[in-house]
Amino acid sequence: MRVPDYEHGTGRHCGSTSLRNLSRFHGWGFDEPTCFGLASGLGFTYFDLPTPPHRAFFGRPPFLERAFLETLGIGYDRRAGEDWETAWAGIKAHLDAGRPVLVFADIYHLDYFGTDTHFSPHALLAVGYEETSEDVFVHLSDSEFPEEQRVPVDSLRRALSVSSEESYPTENRYLAVTDPEVRVPVGEAVRTATESTARYMLDPQSGAYDPGGFGVHGLTGVRAFAADLPTWTELPDPRWTTRFAYQNVERRGTGGGAFRGLQRDFFRSVDHPYGEAVTEEMAAIADDWTAVGATLRDASEADDAGLERGLRAASASVEACADREAALYRSLLDV
Image (cartoon, rainbow, N blue to C red; front, side, top):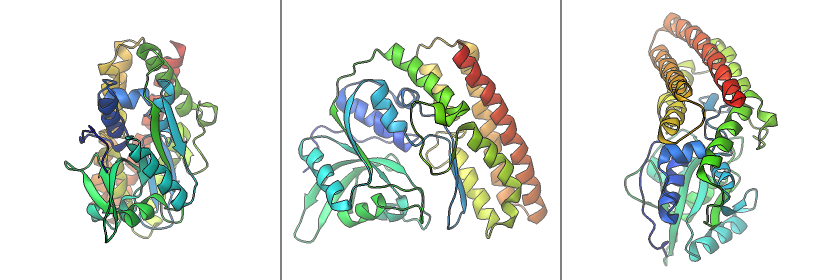
């Protein structure tokens, strides 16, 4: 069984690409940067891990996909924390009804990635399943691959059932659109989403969505990351931690500049009330984060003294990014 008329496509970030693919399926007409911005997609989450790389962050919030649907007034079903049998039954029911299902996985357990590093939550769409005499297989639309992927259902179970002892917990979380009508005018949604981003970044607990208790969020998380960087030399494998941090700025589905490049492109794609100066400031901030990524990459390849210098330099640059972002978010709310 496969969802009829679903069209797979790749993109820059897993969450916003999945939303773009849903937009194509439901006829909403949004490109990926617009999906990202309407999802209040810009954010920051910094956290510790019990296994290598021991420190990690995302330049996006944990509620991105849900926020997109709610900002536009689209009806959906969201589940998290159920046991696997209940979750799989719900996913199958949506697929049987012809609905793609957005799931949140750890790529470590998805065979086609071939990685020994935990990385979650990776957003992708379940778009079908097949039951054979040997096993049940699930068809996945993953932004990282040009073709749909087919995995045994047990691989999906492991990927969706990750605990905080391994990585960012996935909690058998999924959502599916149940009523695709867009009820909020796009211009209104642009403003709502942008101001929600600003409030979350300045004070995560006062935002429209609870970011949860895993990690440190918003600009507080950015500054915690900056303060922690010089101490990474004490970690078991500081070069891998530093390399992973570079990847979380420029690679691993960020769209460039720790997701700031996607927000820049959102401002360039839509008619917004904040002025050209805001768009260009977002572009400059994205460039600053790209420069942080380059510093981290070079530090990961340096000798001990170079690693230490690079981490100190990155710390100062990240703190400067936090200051610059804080000023931008305040200006958005002033408008």
